Length: 452
Image (tube, rainbow, N blue to C red):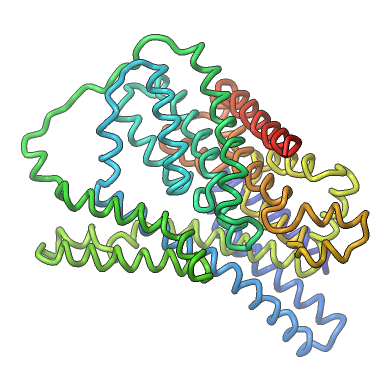
């Protein structure tokens, strides 16, 4: 039965990876994979224990895993709603309207650094969508624009890796207490910055001249058609970004889970938008309200995370991941090689199940367990304590390794869909730059540890 679980997971994962050729949404494949894996698990237990006893034991474990997963899902849902609310009020115009340069190299660095820091506050997927929309206003023509979009993908993934709220995988590790907000920022900021700087420096020697700007179009009455006033845009932008930045503070002060902090921020924004739009008619108010914005939230992505995390938890319950962890340790020998391999693998397959699997394969070690272990095991276990070397490097590698292929990250997939970038074009023009940046960042992290 347990072999069937592994087979179902592999087939389901292939369906997720081949989403576009199969024309089946990855959320559907993930949910079916999760249900089938847990079904096979309970049937397998039933062949050993009495059916009622086996069913009860598996359900208890399922509820335990679902409790952990729901914390991630509620956090994502709250964060996505806040970002959509800012976007619906055109709050990001405060950033995009201030870029005036036409020089290719200057624009490259400005776009790269805005994406890098914006991704740390928002998430890499949303930042990519915002920045690609911005580039359409700054650069004319897809072939000209694609190189900038490639840099956006690299910068968004690099920026998300050093922030607890910048990438889904980093958020998972933060919520699971494998890393802390201060620990991941201090430990990964410089490696992530190097990951971006290497591609920027290489491209700076290749890009010359000025980027062609889109032809301006004037529309009469444009101001009247703007859905929000300057005050409303700026208020929602400040409250929205403030709510996201407040989450680590809320967790530190109250010791409540991060999803409580994000729900608090969403509640404040909800009340604020209801108040400032209370005098408008229903047709104008609805698209600017939380109720209206919830219709635009990417619900299939939330269901995908639910399905894939449940599927991975079933493998953890069955003991598959423990076996894989043992094999990796015996084959690769050290955490640097394991994490580097996970990062490269995330360019081929989604990084969410990879990190979820690693979290189950390598349980979080406590200082007491490290102290009680033998000298041989103590050094190894010490790498898996909170803010330990393994977890920090996992956050970096899983977050940035996917940039090597355009299908290797949510940011890349979003850019590919919006700009119709081909897989082969990205492979020829951007993949090597992303790989060099990823490797340089990993080397930087290892170098900092050696100097510490």
